[in-house]
Length: 134
Image (tube, rainbow, N blue to C red; front, side):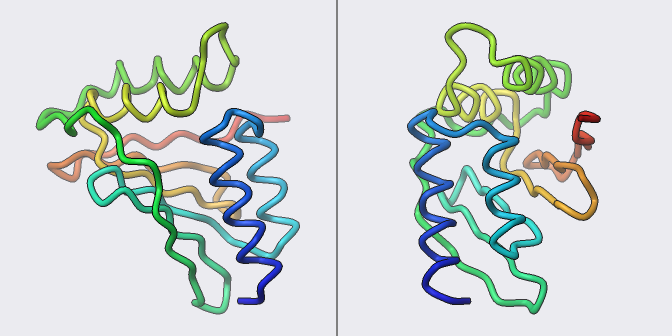
């Protein structure tokens, strides 16, 4: 991984946290930089960015203040995802992360080639969210 790619990954993480970049903007930026996906772990407060050659960069992410709930509430998580997709008034990535954790989401993985995000509960229950058609 080169320094440009490291800088782009950091900028995308910061852009999400500051609400200065939307999910589609982050995905496009990371794809253009050669990434194949990324993963966010709420319990470890990390974001890991992956290249196709197996190289990766793990960055510290802002910790959620809400403990990850033991039960996975897919309906509540889906509602938070819809709010993010529609950028409803008051939406923030930080708020999304808090809601996801309180809905039992421990981590999520985004696959650019698969055009989907996989949300994982503490009990390994999953919710697959396909990217909306553009």
